[in-house]
Length: 124
Image 1 (cartoon, rainbow, N blue to C red):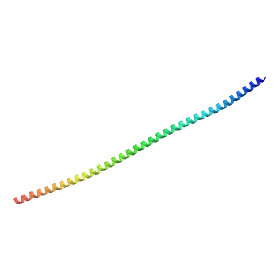
Image 2 (tube, rainbow, N blue to C red; image 1 turned 90 degrees about the vertical axis):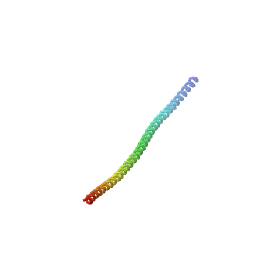
Image 3 (cartoon, rainbow, N blue to C red; image 1 turned 180 degrees about the horizontal axis):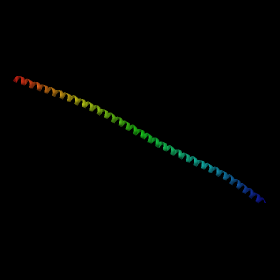
Image 4 (cartoon, rainbow, N blue to C red; image 1 turned 180 degrees about the vertical axis):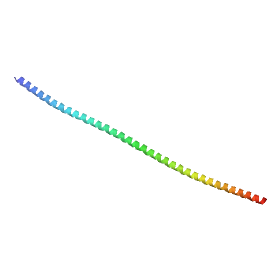
């Protein structure tokens, strides 16, 4: 009978230890699952941050390209305006030269007429 009681107490003790071990195991499994959830959340956040960073890099690159294009457009506009001014100046010089040539030709014709007129009157 003593052996039976000792065995019964030993079995009861082992059952209690197994119950405690099961509780600890379940607690550890819960902690492990919570750690997995936190890891998944951290990975999702990392992925979102990487996407945002890529978008920001793309936006910055686009802005830089737009600024370069704007600077080139401005330079091209300034060059076109300078060319127009030079063309206008050249046309003005050509116009003045043509006017001077026209006046000189007119004056030469007038002198030629006068010379012709003087030549006739001395002959007569």
